[in-house]
Image (cartoon, rainbow, N blue to C red; front, side, top):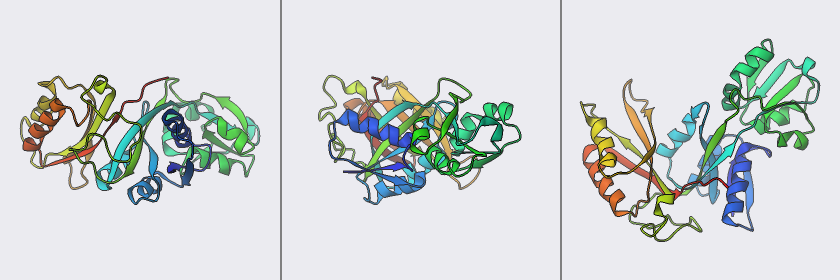
Length: 294
């Protein structure tokens, strides 16, 4: 089994993937590292990886736009989710007084925006493909530092100068596990998603989540109200709703919706029939076990 993650080694995506592997009890797994999110995502869509683990949202900076766009554009199915605590550290070969350049992924830099402004106002800030890539590069020069996971320090021969430097201590990122293919709403469980419940109508079905994308071509009064009403009147709990620009024109959006329940539940099927009549596009991304904190 091959699982694609954002690389190189020491990334938060790797950490999330290893947590999922442990939870599923997989024994023979190979991690394949990719330079950016799109490459890791595309690997799953094209079958070059059995699964890929993709960051989709952060508790400080919100959704990862490229991940949302790829969920719409590419043929993949969500098989699971992982939520991990993010604890950024400042890593470097040299001392704090030598730092002239600070490297990291744009999301990590944004999560440490106030820290950087207060502590390193004169440092040059550079974006990298991942936090672990930043750590790899920081090992080349003493005047460079990386914002990365503390585990990357040992891997790349760096010192941890400062720990927990994110602007908010409660910092979590949600990752999705995706596989190749389209979701078939008549399937009880997505094909090739191992160790999931085979009967979502049985006890414990509430431990599932379903994700979908909808599009309303013609903006009209009450259109969003009708969409949300399909869930409200059936008592379906929404866990997330977000608009994403269609890139056609201003004011034109796709809506990304996560809610509790499985596509196999009768009440969910009924709601989707209602939604189809009031929208111009409905793409079911998958039904999958909701992440439970250990």
